[in-house]
Image (cartoon, rainbow, N blue to C red; front, top):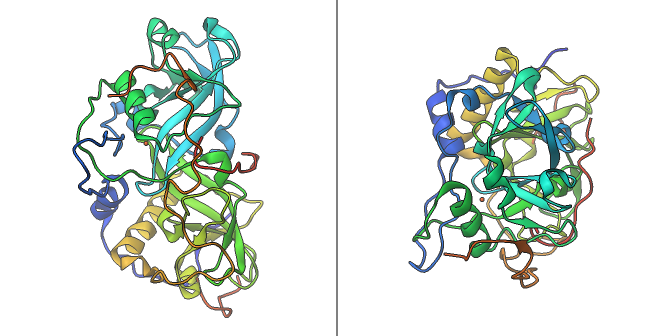
Length: 342
């Protein structure tokens, strides 16, 4: 199986720029009364730094073990910060184990490490686990709410409320995979086939898009940085592809039924250099303008239903392109739910 650029691309030596662009949060001044969300991946121990990249579609339902290798639960979903290209929370179901009932629990990605045979190990002491904030499967909290995120961050990381940076828009991973992507005109351009993340550092590495024939005549899956897609503030609206078609010719691509080894050194280096070149080129993003055929991008709070203050059980008091002439040449993460990551 070969991973191919769609045209020859001279890649600048900007690996250091990639590291900075992928992990640094965009800072914005807010009121001193605004709680600070988890804004960037915390420094990870060596074991976490060596964690493999993984497709979101392969994470849902995956077993989670304790330090002794015993299964204690599985992954229900992930929460993704679109602006920071980061996973602030991994949501687990313990299925009644540990006396935790049938609730869901959100943990920051630095709570995990790769165990034997790449099993996910939850590094949380059982006493702390039993007192963790949980919520009902049918009543997700609003993760875009500062108080909710501030309480979770303080509980697991000892974070204090402080003046902070701009709140990123959060989506559940299950709302992303399979989601249609539109052109700015409102015409459908394709859909998100999968998203690749690394739980060791919490980064969203890239998205994999299945474009229609107008954008990808050869029908291959296309690798793009998350920033190449504009995600609205409401998950009932479709995201918008925000680069010109002729940029798709520079992207990496592969056959739908022949995924490469996403953890091979050659693949990772090639894709990361491409993402670095994308960043260095100013991303080729289309300037935002009136959107036809779809609703205008809404503020992050546009569709919020007021959060149920009791939705988090035991929550601590409040205090994550080519034109039409482009060269020829596993997922089950579930459908999207309306509303913001809740």
